[in-house]
Length: 167
Image 1 (cartoon, rainbow, N blue to C red):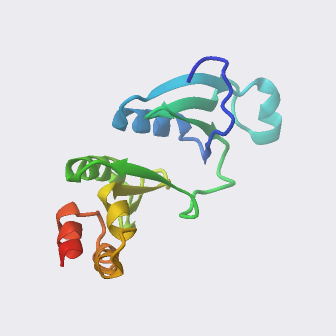
Image 2 (image 1 turned 90 degrees about the vertical axis):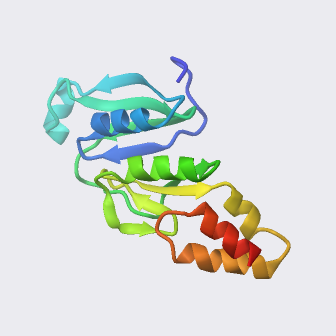
């Protein structure tokens, strides 16, 4: 993030107390990523939330140029699948890379149709960009075959999707 520039819209991720760990994890996976400004809790907040002075409160960071903020807010709120981040991939190699890295330590039961939940509870969709062309094409029969194939997958398989499209 450019220092002192405030983005118009920035996703904010509420973690119990693993924000710094999670941000380091995400930045290690995505290229063109970095950690920016970090704020810390002061002594005045201890009486309200019992988070010790000096503990990281927020971290500004970017993943592939997309700005985010991570907050150590305590156990009051948890992530769910109502919000997910789509990672658009150019081919199977990229799909495999992001799937393997983001799913490490995550919830295997939450893996379906290209969706996964990472070890922090954040949901991701790992999607080959070719999928958009196949399911929105002019031939509903081809699109239907691709959709049926996708619904049976955990991780997206580009070769199988193409085979379904071709019939």
